[in-house]
Amino acid sequence: MKHSGFAEPSKDSGALFSLEPQDALRRFSRASVTISWRANRYGCRWKRAMGRPVRFAPKITRGTCHCGAVRWEYRGDIPDATICNCTVCRRYGVLWTYGYDGHEIAVEDPGIAMAAYICGSRRISFNFCKLCGNLISWRSLRPNDDGRTRIAVNLRLADPQQVSEVPLRRFDGLHSFHDLPLDGRTVADVWF
Image (cartoon, rainbow, N blue to C red):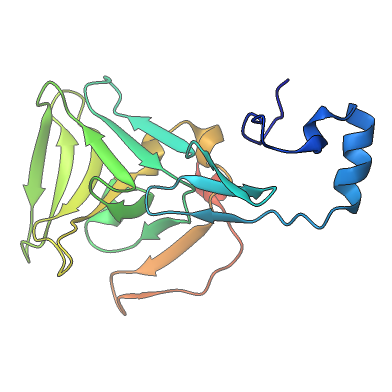
């Protein structure tokens, strides 16, 4: 018998699973079972059920360039999308979501189709598909003190339905170099 959202019951899981469904539901509604969610660094969700943690697969959002030669994957819930007005980002028209290379974000380039543009401060590279010209990501050229490398991927390369409800964060990269106040907009509000 499958129990959606919970692990398969074992023989030692108690009498609750041996009851008829309506009896189990009544017992569940009276029980003081708390369900808690949390995300680990890989975006996996855990649910506490009957006192035992159960692991669920992380949410995965994928994007690809127009020709399909380069792909990216974001593991976990995307917290926000950043629209930036700096001299580079405003020209590209991208929506960035941030993470760490090999942790939340993985970029796959099996055919070595990516080319990098490194400008000015030489701190980040903007990575394009050489075949179709789509901007895939930016990547820090130096790891942080903890050894992880910061990366952002272009949400405009994902399926619009997957990212439409992601909150939009505006970053003033031209003047103040600070986040602007949130205004309640989502990716769907700036998609076109």
